[in-house]
Length: 315
Image (cartoon, rainbow, N blue to C red; front, side, top):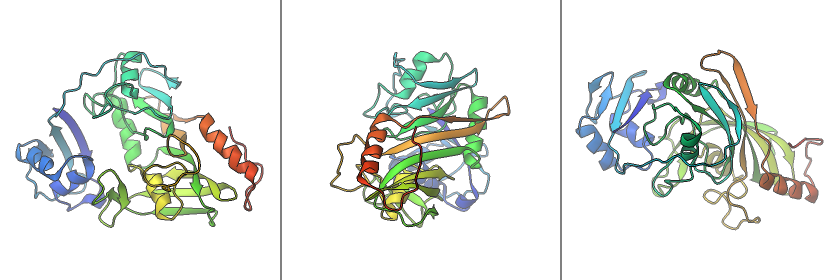
């Protein structure tokens, strides 16, 4: 069994248990979720609940999910770009192309496989398949993320994610020239009703807020900074596509005909800041823009700008 815990947000109050889990458990069918609940594997405040139970604000939901595939996670000697490490946490600069944790189709070569080789202990809150994983970034997004080495650190970091106090700053290059210098994109997101691989803007989706500002304008593209208030799956990619400015290189939400031969979207998790779980000090980490990102940035810059902000330094 994989044990997953949730604390119900205000926005999900009065939502049925099965509807809530359908949103949270990406990739699992409604029938599978119903089966999990019917088998007595959904506990709210320590008591087994049925599918039609309406959640209350701050309810503690514990879900026991049977593993369809029992993964034999093996440590792998994969080089890690470690920005910081102590007994509680490890901060990694993840490269593009690396999956964060094992899942169907990606059982080896993941960040978790590398962490199991490097670390003696990782938190177990997210189950045996995702040890230590507090948050994720997409396979084709490079940049900073933090991993918890014990359950105390995991809970402390997860609480910061939940109350939106963790600093998460991304850089991206989008299609088209953005007119506004900055804006807040407040569009709820949920699983696409037809294409289950995609996330889309839905009235019934979960609250999702992205703050962006223009760093530099090019002839037909814009270099931007995005600050996440929430952290939904594909949030920046979907929000920018929704306003007509998808990320360059995005194979799912971007232009069908891409100008550049890229392995994925030009999105970089530039900065991550949080309060250390045991030291109580605010810590902030940055990673340099990857070479493949820099290459496109300078190519676009040399083509000319559209009222761009001058003198921006790219590291």
